[in-house]
Amino acid sequence: MSLEPFATSKPLTLGVELELQIVGTHDYDLAPGAADLLRVLGRRRLPGNVVPEITDSMIELSTGICSGHGDALAQLREIRDALVDCADRLGIALSGGGTHPFQDWSQRRIFDKPRFHQISELYGYLSKQFTIFGQHVHVGCPSADEALVLLHGMGRFIPHLIALAASSPFVQGTDTRFHSARLNSVFAFPLSGRAPFAVTWDEFGVYFGKMARTGVVASMKDFYWDIRPKPEYGTIEVRVLDTPLTIEKAAALAGLVQCLARWLTVDRPYTPAEDDYLPYTFNRFQACRFGLDGTFVDPKTGEHRLLRDDLRALLVRIASHAEALGAEDALSFIAAELAGDGNDATWIRRVQARERLLPEVVRQQARRWAGRDPGG
Image (cartoon, rainbow, N blue to C red; front, side, top):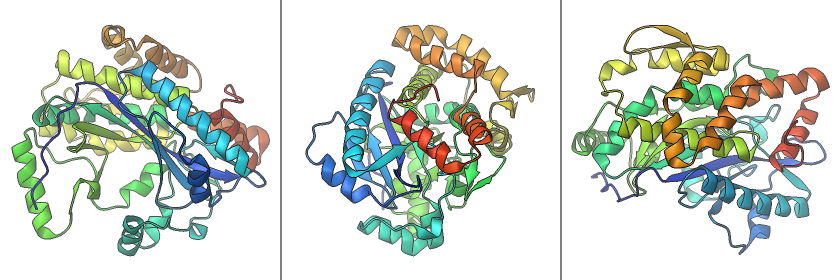
């Protein structure tokens, strides 16, 4: 099986995907409402798409191709408002967050779709434990080789993105002490983690061919890497973000990724090298466990810095690219987050400390998602 050709894509365009929790409004546990929600959504004209996910308490929305932060925010709001209206009609609610704080994974049901049943047969109980919720950001690339160079350049900033987007401190009713516990579930799958080091599409094709011959993979969908190329779209796909609690943060994170991509491709501050990945797993763990207070080890210098401090310096370095892209509001949003809670995991913990009731936390999360209580 050969690797499909890399499609032509306009450079630096964006696409955003968000996996959402469907919760009941009586107990705020996960509710099996995906099929009903899709039915009520029906033939509404949306700028993107809404599809089921692996279990029937999840839904995934996606934008169309976006020019930048403002376009992504407008599309996400339009889709969000349509989904919230449909959920209200069904007596259910939608929420962000990378994990549901107290759901029992064994009670989940696989959505009736052939690929989801195939995944369930292959991975067993892991498929139900995969009821976790992430944000994916696609970035358009002019060629396959440039996509791979961007992928490896972006890999340096995976811990920063994890720490900013972290929103999954609770699992099965327990505070995990992680900021992003969601990614621990992703790590349980084979072919997760970092992509192999290849900087040309021919080189990557050789790797893919070897993997395909083993029978381990049949398509790019079988790779659960933190960032992966998507040849059918002509993009790279950043996959480490927990689903934020608000549309505004989701759009700001997408804007940040776009600014990073422009900086990496225009200024070319780094030459990708295999050794860049030496501290990768350590940095990734630090971001998941400690959020913005985690340690970042610079792969070039070996210097240790707090992710929070490194992000503040990064925002200064990419400010001119934000201006060129019209993404100043995105970086301003991120700067305000750094000055406040930093990430949604901190907000979730604070609300639980005040309320001492996880269903109430989810209720407030759902209100934030709907735009009814954005401050929390």
